[in-house]
Length: 246
Image 1 (cartoon, rainbow, N blue to C red):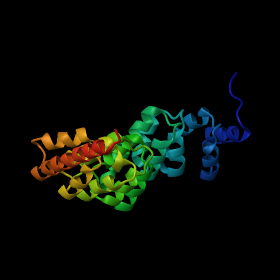
Image 2: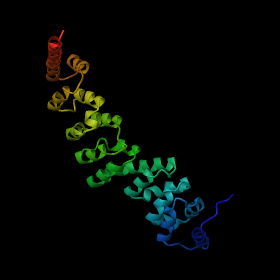
Image 3: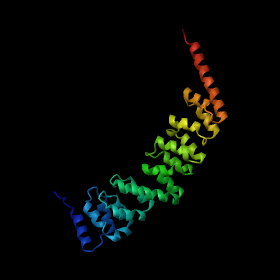
Image 4: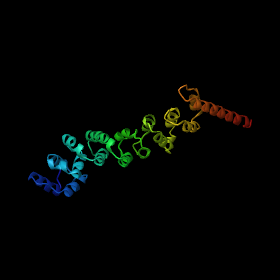
């Protein structure tokens, strides 16, 4: 059976068909409804004036029935915050969501630190990767609290971010800075200051410490420290065995 349309929707459709232009407030109210019918969105996509109303435009683009050709024209007209809404809305069609993320990535270079920091807290998974190399620790700290941030992203940040302060922000984080994979990679990374790497050694297992001590690719001071720590661990283990009751 065809969907029975709400009288308000019918009235708006009739106004559109007669060449009229509904009020922005009325349209945004209808478009925000979960029950907003696709027929209204498809009809609005045929109106050129919709492209001049940012509030209406981003709601039309987020609707699952938004025509793709219309979205391709609309996305470049949206601000970064509207693009973020499009990318985070689960109702948005996957193709349009991916395109909105591409457009947002293109905009990052022109965003202020405050805007990038706000984006980092809320960015969908497709945007997180574009922020891993940000040179500002404030932005990276916000990214670390993003629910879409993963261990894989943490390792990529460690390997790709050129600002040591951003790397330290990762290592100071109570969750990501204690992940075994992150610790192992940090100790072996030339982007981590020697003093920090020395402090991280104690958090590794004996097997991992032995690997550091034997690696020719690691700084000599760090290898020596690993050897000393390994001897100390073995000495403590031996002392505990000798003191155990027979």
